[in-house]
Length: 185
Image (cartoon, rainbow, N blue to C red; front, side):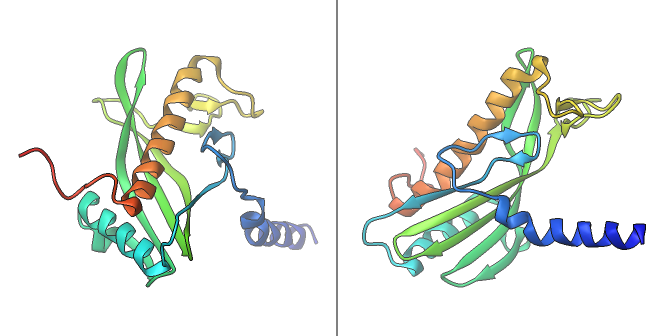
């Protein structure tokens, strides 16, 4: 009976998890991961135009984008994984970078982006990864009880900034305001 309850609970959490995601104005890392999803609205943009701009962004900005793309439904949805996004500092030293899983959904005149942190990866020699929630001797942004670790206040803020800057770059590529294909050469 006990095992049956565990299986039912696990199944319900798995099925209901997407329902807990909510539209937010800014992405923030919480004890449970990223706090929700962002939606950008565009003027007179068809789904195929938005989709084409986002897939072009992935091709220019992800090494081996074809292999990093997990799912791709033309003019509707694309999901991909991207590593080494941003640089997170600790005590003024470059310490971590983010590995992310990204899903972008496209509709008439709008796009939605969901970002999950796969790993906060150490970039210095002998630097371990950072977990969102710590336990025992494992470093985390939050304690086991869900309270933020005071020493990582600026680290959390910098992670939030990296997540929002990253999503803005994708959204802005649709507007054509940032020409990611050219640089000053």
